[in-house]
Image 1 (cartoon, rainbow, N blue to C red):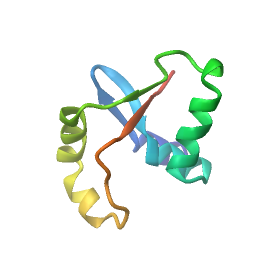
Image 2: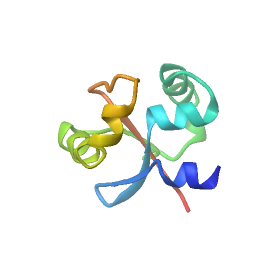
Image 3: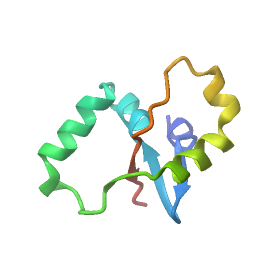
Image 4: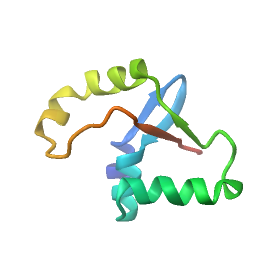
Length: 87
């Protein structure tokens, strides 16, 4: 399980993050449900815990992972949300 998590941690803007869809999968919920829960409980998270990634950030991640994404049956959406990984 730990390796599966580590495989889904990326560096964006110098921060270790997980994509919304990967974190949702880890918790066994739909991506939209995860985003709603975090927004409804924003006071429980650090202010910079969640951020919308710029197109360039997404292109960098998916460019590196292009081969994996092509094998992935889930469609990639434009508005990805990044969640910081705290050590």
